Image (tube, rainbow, N blue to C red; front, side):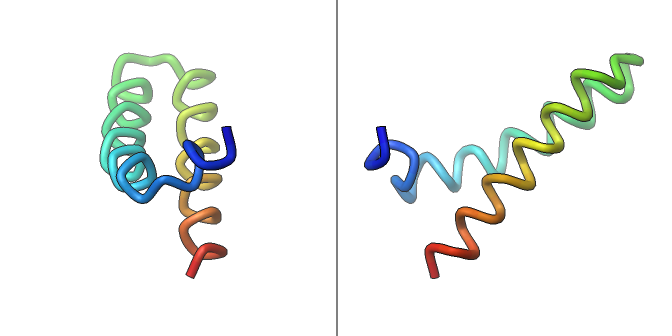
Length: 52
């Protein structure tokens, strides 16, 4: 699991997909889903920052 989580391809794809998904959730009116997706994006960005 740890290897999959720190895989650079996974991190790049997650950093591209999560902001789009969070924005779409906010636009459609699902604030809870948007907040969860935005929190996941912040976690991915933290992992990227800690990895360097």
